[in-house]
Amino acid sequence: MTDPRNRRDRQTENGRTGRSRIGARDGRDRQDATAADRAVVPSPEAVLGQIPTGTTLHRELAAAARSRGRTASVRAELTSLRERLTPTAVPAVDLDSARRRVADAGGEEERLKEQIAALRGDVRARRSVDADTTETLAELESTAAALARAQTDRIAAEQALEGVLAQADRARDVRERRLELRDRVENRRRDARRELARAVYPAFRGALSVVPGVVPDDAGTRPSTYEGPRLAASLAAVRIAELDAPVAVGESVAAWIAEHGDGIAVTAVIDAETVEQHGDIS
Image (tube, rainbow, N blue to C red; front, top):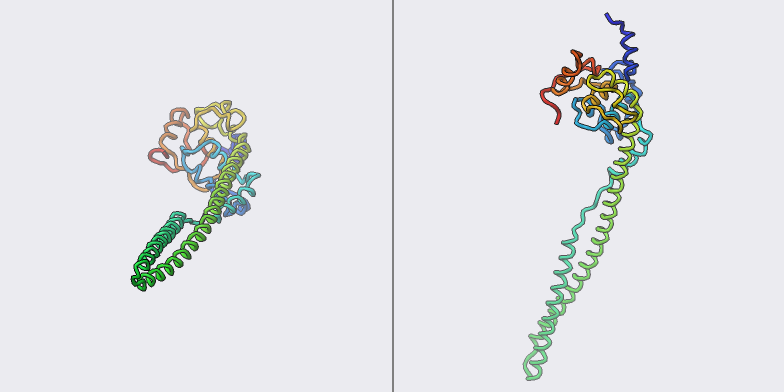
C-alpha cells in the first residue's frame, strides 16, 4: 500500500500544495472572498467544475489561483469600479414627445394668428359698408384670448423641451461614464486574470507532467506561450485547483485519457472527485 506521506510529496512536486482537494480551503480564504468579489468573477467551481471547461487558459488558471486563496493586486480597484458601476442608472428621456408638444403648440398658435388676421379683415370689410361688426368683434376677442393661451402653452412646451434636452445631455454623460467604467472594469478583470494565471503557472507546468498526451516543455514560461492541447491544459488547471465540488467529466476527456494515458484513471490525473457527464459542455 502506498504511504500517504509519499503521495503528498508527489502532489507537491506535480504542482499541488499537499492539502485535501475537497472542502479543505482555509476558512480565512472564504472570508476574504467578499460579496463584491463574487459579483466580479465566477466561482472556481463555475469555471473548472466541468471538463472541457469551454473557456480560455487564462480564465482556467485564474480560477485555479482563486481556489488556492490567491487574490490579484487590482482586486480592491476592481471592486470599487464595480460598486460605482452598479448604481449608475440611465434616466429615461422622451425627446420625441417633448418635440411633438412644441410642434403642436406652435401649430395651434399659427392657426389662431391666421384666424385673427382673417377676422380683422372681416371687421374692416364690414365697417367699410357700415355693416354690423358686433358678432365678428366678439369672435375676434375670443380668438385673441385663445391665442394668448396657445402662446403660453407654446412657451411652456419650449421650456419643457429645454429641460428634456438637458436631461438627454445628462443621460448621455451617464451612458458615457458607464461605458468608460465598463471598459475599465473589463481591463482590470483582464489584468487580474493575467496576474493570477502567471502566479500559478509554475504549478500548472508541474501538473502537466501528470497529464497524458502533452509535453510539459510545450507550456513555455507563461500562459500566452502554451502550445499544448487545450484539453490537457484544462486537466492540469483542474489538478492544481482546490475545488469544493466534484468535477463533471465529458466523454472527450475519458476518450483522451484512454488514448494517451496507458490505463490511468481520470481521477488520478485531475486528483479530484468526478461525476460522469454524457457529452461535452458546448
